[in-house]
Image (cartoon, rainbow, N blue to C red; front, top):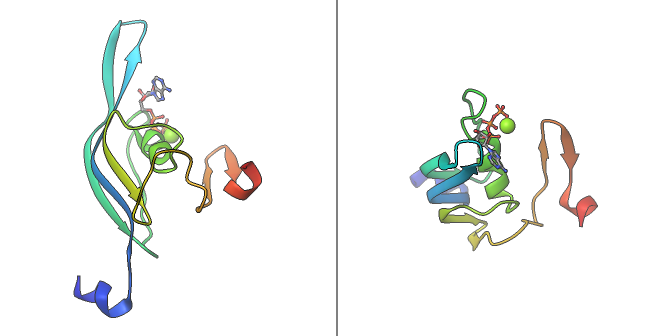
Length: 104
Ligand SMILES: Nc1ncnc2c1ncn2[C@@H]1O[C@H](COP(=O)(O)OP(=O)(O)OP(=O)(O)O)[C@@H](O)[C@H]1O
Ligand SMILES: [Mg+2]
């Protein structure tokens, strides 16, 4: 916290109690792709999401970008609640390079 105040750094992304459930039509059940996650990412901080295939990495990134909605919890980007596609930031996926200016 002291370092953040000294450097004038801000919290860029806040993830509060975020969960995402999907429905599995084959099994007829809901399953949890992202379970109750809390995370804060600072401006200029570099982070990696690591984990086995299917552990929810892309689902989390899609939620931060506002492309899918969490089943519960809250995500803030630049202090604003994410309620739809975030248009102030650029991002790319493993198979797609996309700047929001190009996509809008
Ligand atoms: N739109 C969707 N509908 C139903 N299930 C989904 C949907 N998107 C993702 N899932 C499921 O949610 C789980 C997490 O998927 P996700 O794509 O986030 O994993 P991942 O960690 O990014 O995997 P990978 O390393 O293979 O990219 C998987 O079981 C996946 O099948
Ligand atoms: Mg993925």
